Length: 95
Image (tube, rainbow, N blue to C red):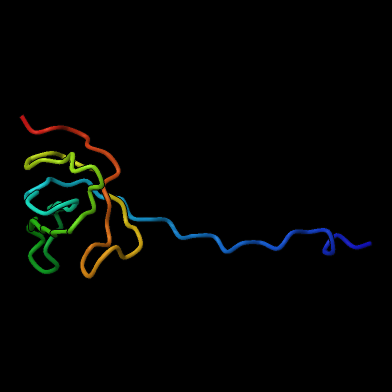
């Protein structure tokens, strides 16, 4: 018998999911928060550091997040028209 006959079929590996760290800026929706993620990049021509911000609608199953919280979010399957992220953990609660 050959080894290929006893080998199990391989399942396709799922890609690495993106993880971001951001601040909750709105929590008025049910089970949804808006998280702002900031990053710094050097300008192509002038080499000055430029701040970039992105806002994500994030799924918060237990409605635990509040405005000002620092949260870690991860990519997930589409949950609604604009929600493609979910809360992994609350890193720091707002004071």
